[in-house]
Length: 153
Image 1 (cartoon, one colour):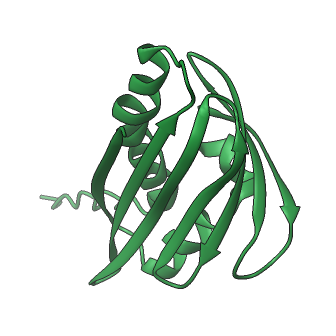
Image 2: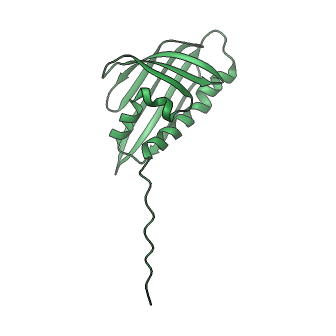
Image 3: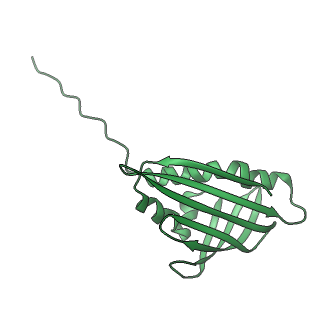
């Protein structure tokens, strides 16, 4: 069972990070691997979403989520190349407007799946997801350089 667990510290409050992670239909705008995302079943705590990913090949999957303020978990209902796809985003406030986001993913591939697809999904995609989440959450938060004051003689 290929799996990964990786974290990143984000310079944004936990509420903002949660809002972005839970905005599934916006995923194609900030996760390049996600080509499409459609809500199939609306629910505050248990939405179902159809995703189309492009990782080596096009992958369709229908995921059911379980959401709370600190965790957004998912499990596979059906999908290409996978028997199961279980994962979660764990969000932890680190104070002073910082959040640690942890991405966990465990996939059981279907009978025969090329190693390149599994490697791309598990090994390469996780750090990319975290990097893109961090960038999206920190947009507009860059500190402005202080103005240079010059003394007149």
